[in-house]
Image 1 (cartoon, one colour):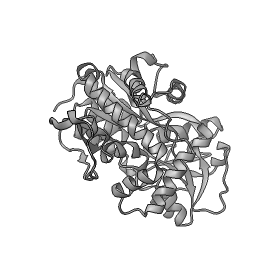
Image 2: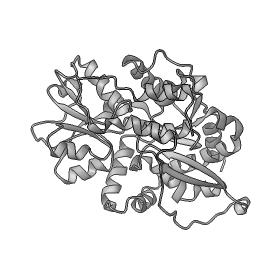
Image 3: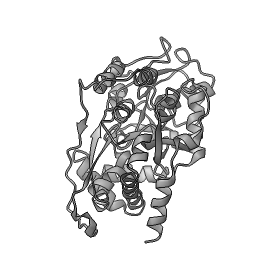
Image 4: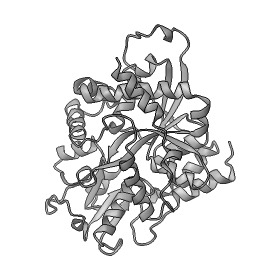
Length: 370
């Protein structure tokens, strides 16, 4: 598969570094080359390997062959639990869908799978839709699955006490995921708000997902942005939460479900079924902690169940998972404003061209009528 000129320009823009010698970079940040290689077929995405638990299919219409659908997730992570509940809890199956969850290894890679046509949906940083729209690619955000900055600043240094003012990052190195991921963008924006000069007053260490703990342990970083369940795992090792990004930021579009405009126009029934199942899974997560933890335990068998339950409980208390999939435009515009301030976007885009809430709104009505 070859890239068109506009696709190449999109991903050069998405993956181009925006902070030069002022920030500390991980040697793994050459992942931009990996994404391009993926797009031309030199590498592939890893397919999900977990078998769904036995479920009773109550929908007689699903006796026909299920429609195959591919979603590429940025990472396999506990914060994507709603996706796993939809799959392993049988909600996709109830809708007549056979969903293959593939893992890109990063937001850019998941988005690359979508734009190249290898995936019907992508789950990851929704800002990529806005950024790519300025380069000519037409996509739609169909729902928001995480609408808080679901990150916590974790440290092994007992001299660093919990703080909420970003001035507290002065003279510290913070590990984040690589730009242009929202985790990096949020940290950079917090530094700017505190009038901290990046590279002088504070530093950012860009790390590949899964290496944050190592950055703390080897002394490269004073604080690491972490997702659950890594936060809870590090607490067990004696680390402390010193900064709560959900509390500081409040509602902000963090993880969304995206599709190409072509898919939305050509396969609206499939899209509706997918969103229906996802909305049902979201409601399940809100109302059934034990069942959700059971599914998480099968997805992450190497993590103790109590840790998973603790992690899910923290996420729920922080209101990480929205009440419904419907995109909150205030949270969406907050994300985009940050992107504009740091130069990722030229201007605030037209919401009506990027967000399609019609499927999520219908899914909510269908759920409420039952």
